[in-house]
Image (cartoon, rainbow, N blue to C red; front, side):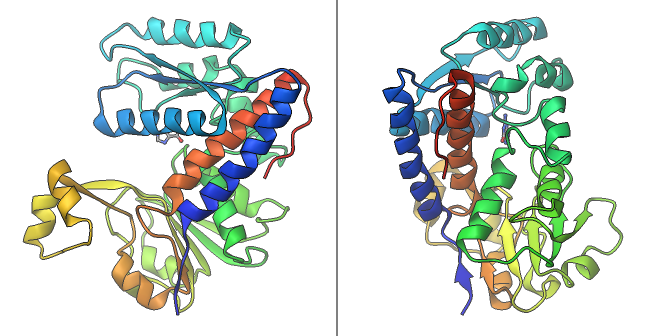
Amino acid sequence: MTKVIDGNAVAEQIRSELEGSVETLADAGSRPGLATVLMSEDPASETYVSMKQRDCDEVGIEGIHVEIDADAPAQELYDTVEDLNADEDVHGILVQMPVPDHVDQRTVLRTVAPEKDVDGFHPENVGRLVAGDARFKPCTPHGVQKLLEHADVETDGAEAVVVGRSMIVGKPMANLLVQKEPLGNATTTVCHSHTGDLAAHTREADIVVAAAGVPEMIDGSMLKEGATVVDVGVNRVDVSERRSEGSQTESDEADTEKGYELVGDVDFESAKETAGAITPVPGGVGPMTRAMLLYNTVKAAGQQEGVDVDLP
Ligand code: GUN
């Protein structure tokens, strides 16, 4: 039987443990604060940020949300980040990516104070991660590690293939899997859009992390029997297109209202036939990314306030 890894359940467990850490901080007289900054009119980004704010409320983190007009000068974003750097009530800062084309993403990432960089995207934090001395592990790959841990998947000595080389997922994921530490020690290959024969790599893998942003690019024929498959993809696919391809899902009714359906980078139905364990979309990695943002925010607050907090 293929195990379907329930990201909602693991995320809920982490959130409830974090509530205890928030109480420890409250006893010491402080409340963790997370600032989210959105400079985009992309509906998906708007949804992600509002979900992150709702999560904050749920565990007792003070959520601050700043919206900047997508046409505003780039300097307005840099200045906003500087103000948040100086705000003692703000322990974590997240600038939702992508930013508009006229904004220099690298400048944004370097402007966030490394101590408040709960995404782990500042070059100082990227360097620390690679060096095996992470201050903040980026939320999605950290969430993937936690899922593997909860599903009792052995990474030590495993062949791992990461598909995708983004700053947000692929590169930090590979760096975590290769570290000489628990939930690492995997022989790790990174595949990407210029890889010649992707299936030749994925078929050798005990663990496949799909993070390329291409709907259903990995199917069962590309997997080794019993492999663990972690699907990071969140692709919005037009419902009418899917219908014309003859695909139907249980969430059809709700999807019709929204006009799109969420699919991963993995063709779940065929992959499930070959995989030993697999994460669904939605309900797999997505909730874990959000939970690990709360984790990093609580960690940041503990560090900045000089309070020892237990983390899940
Ligand atoms: N856009 C998509 N994923 C992320 C993320 O993890 N952090 C930020 N800041 N932006 C994103």
